[in-house]
Image (cartoon, rainbow, N blue to C red; front, side, top):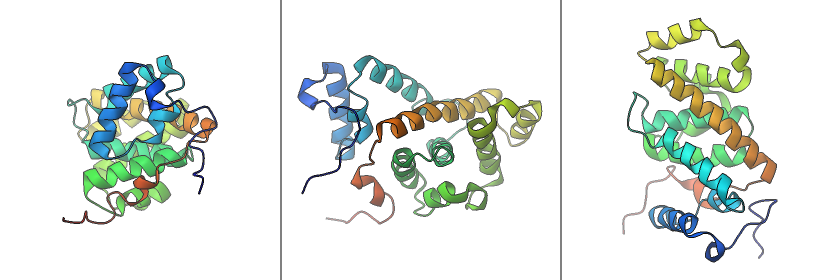
Length: 196
């Protein structure tokens, strides 16, 4: 059986990648048990891959601010659903389910975050993320006041907006390239891991 392509563009062999890309990809593979297709699909342009991953890491791996890892993933799922990005909804939905330990949350957010089982604070966060994604030209001071009323700092608000904006780029690259989600993502966080 031939597996579907993971990208419309050439996907380099791991052995042919620059050392820094190969090292990072192997680290991810060891931790996750597989290589997410995004790492390989974007690797045909190493300089852009490095820039993409640097901004990704700056937004998602920071340990400052009040956004939890799960909330950052909520923003990504809602942004990606608005942009109809299959890869990012599936991949980040899986990560969200793992972080939140809620098997239904990613599906709820992807279909209609307004009806999801989330807190009023998270709803305000996602309302803002959705606005950044679909109508950023309409952002006004009242949006900041609403978020501050839910305990978000101005730096938190920047993070919400920056994550939405960055994943707008990511979604468009994934859609451009026809990036296919790894099959492994579909079950992650839905069923308990078997105890061996």
